[in-house]
Length: 71
Image 1 (tube, rainbow, N blue to C red):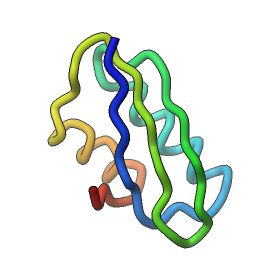
Image 2: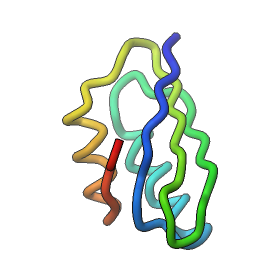
Image 3: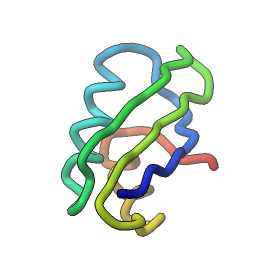
């Protein structure tokens, strides 16, 4: 198992958290998503997966949810 942390910009509420979580869970191997929401700021998204994730896949999933990976 691998846990990776990303910084995501633009989330403001629980709906945002749910949207990002749902998109991240579509990536093969992702087993858990934990988000520390900072309303209107940069939130921390921790993703646990069976193997290391491809950053482009993570960025695409977050983008699909309507947000941006910044780090």
